[in-house]
Length: 124
Image 1: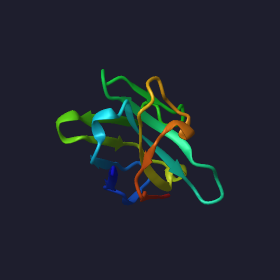
Image 2: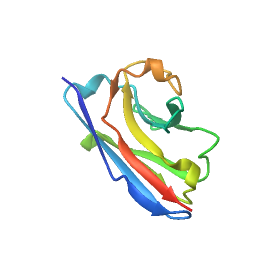
Image 3: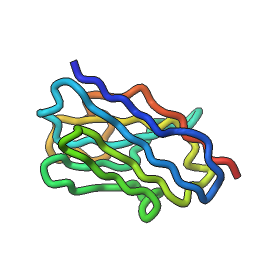
């Protein structure tokens, strides 16, 4: 049984920063990538960023490039999302996700395991 547990969400003013963490436990050895998605009310869940486990390569949605940074700690089976220069439109529930499929980037249907989500609210 795999479990992904997110932490670090909260309320922040526009221009501020937050750091999300996602710790994976269980059969994590088969993961090819871990990433973050987000979902706002009335909208579909959208890709934010992902990190490939074997080489650490990272990919970002255009809307967060230059502001968000994804990183991983392989020893701890943990992935982080550093979010800077936050905007009100970044407000959403942020979900950690893990995939066993090599080459996956932004297709949420190719992610096998999901966390419970953590709320990020950015006030203007």
